[in-house]
Image: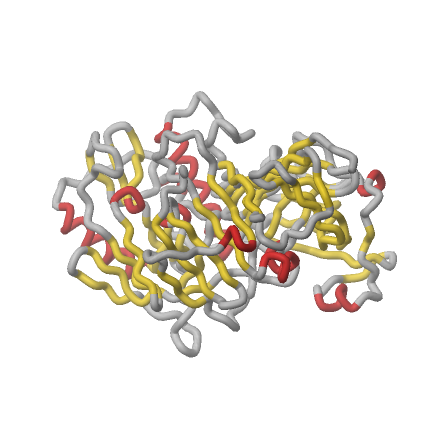
Length: 444
């Protein structure tokens, strides 16, 4: 079989960037599982890496991206101002609060850099011709040069089920995001190639993608689209379906880690989360949009003090938080956050300080590392699962002399962000409809 040598970054709205190197691929089944590397935006391995920034400057930028990311879910969600601010694995790289994932599309494989996004469904990339596109550093995908590209006809049942529209007999899509960004183009079937951590790349023929000809908004010029990992019908997870047994997981390396290892995105048997320390909570069904993974938080404990978490406005009060790997901070309702902050502040008992240009309100002067900072353990009481967060998960270094509480208030939807997920193996099982957590050293 012919071999190809090319790499691409795909942004995963975690969101995560995911890099696929098509260096000898086969039309192999993903049965058994596989893994890909996840590359953090601020990693030296990332195309977004800026060596002139200090670690605290990179963190502040991530916090600002996190607030922007909140608009993806609800445009008026945050009261914060930026001015106040065989198994398969995939690699994720953070972009705008997201990770990037490496992938290739077409035959021969064409590398792309796209956002890996648990808050989106559609897989799309910018395509030629592109009369209205954001500026992109890398070349655009040209479907005419791929032997496996097939547009989805308007007459197909799938076009109707995808709520597609018709233009010149081709099924069209339109994707809009909470921050005002959009992508419009045509649905197509195309070969998607993912590179596993074993060096064996897997090709998935007839994957449904969007070929974007009108794309504008806050997209970064170093990325060329999105790979959706959400719960909807068009997402990569749903399309892989039975081949991965409905399972995927990720293990995000702590931002404090000095290790050179990357985070991992796992599929199939590689995504199984097992062992004595595993706790699981149900994914709440029947909520809109089905893209998001809704969980239920019942309370949060600060030491011996247990704070009841406000129920959702839905019929049974469940589904009051979204878990999202593309959002840096964890966001809670404003009133609840105020009570939580007060309890944490009382438990720490030190003098607070203001940190200019950092959009976090609870900060302390400290030269200690985040892990060494004396902070109370927080327990997030999900339905059926208690997740313990130590200081390494709850505080971040905002400057050389200050650490800050890595949570923030929101006027709308609550989000369980990636700082709270780092150094946990977080597994999604769409068959059982559960999310599982296991404390894990993600550098190993």
